Amino acid sequence: MGAAIWLSLKLAVITTAILLVLGLPLAWWLATTRSRIRPMIEALTALPLVLPPTVLGFYLLILMSPNAPLGSAFLSLTGDTLTFSFTGLVIASILYSLPFAVQPMQTAFAAVGPGLMEAAAMLGASRRDAFASVAMPLARRGMLTAGVLTFAHTLGEFGVVLMVGGNIPGQTRVISIEIFAAVETLDYRTAHILSAGLLVLSFVVLTFVYLLNQGKRRGLV
Image (cartoon, rainbow, N blue to C red; front, side, top):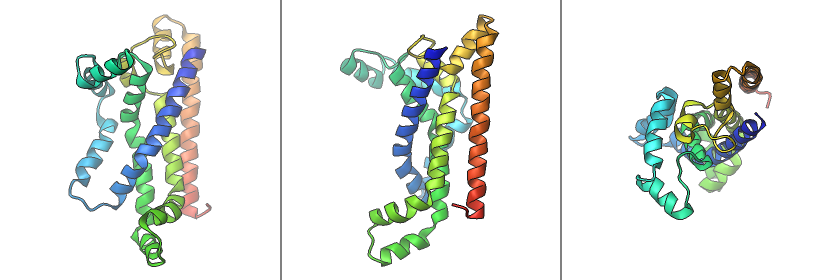
């Protein structure tokens, strides 16, 4: 049980860190662009919200297999396969949790509006300076919400990680899979402990997000 908890925390931290870095420019672009392809990019970003996890996991399994270009290249470079590995779990988690990172930041950036950015530009700030000194501070709640939701969502993943990583103790057996394995072996005590932990975490995360949004509406921060 301890190994599954540690592995899940490690996966959640890495996934959250990567998505905050990669999702930031994507969220900014989606919030400010007038490109005609924006609806398509938004749809692709939000796809994991409506796509069954097993479908995403199945196609990732094919993409990461040693017979596919990506899986073959990784095998040549590292000598290991992407499938049934922790690296494969990270890739799958990044794709599956993408909307939980991008959408809160996109909403926060959209709320900043173009007026403040134009005012910063009139004062001589470059686009990069205006983004760093105006947009990012004003969007900090959205960024914090994105990080918290991504972390919690990654901890609760099941279908995608099971398809891509399987059930290898100490390597790919995360909390959700540990719960599934415990139920299969009638180890309800372990299942109760892990399930209760995720339930409490989910409640705390959602409460935090709602309190954060309430503070935003009241202008407390």
